[in-house]
Image (cartoon, rainbow, N blue to C red; front, side, top):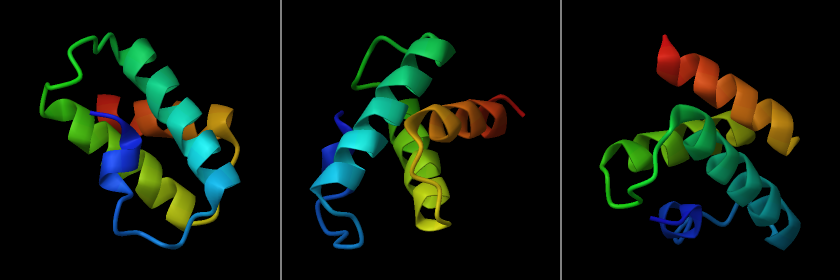
Length: 73
């Protein structure tokens, strides 16, 4: 599942933000070893990345790092 699916009804993010969120999401999936995009955990990864971005973070590296940290705890 691409992160755009999780953002379809969310109008808080502009096109550049979506690019950063997508990069963070893909990087987090890679760090977590998630290959199957239909795995339900990918929705949780997207949700965590989006929630962090809603709190103000837009740096893809930081979004990825924080999302992985949260998901591994």
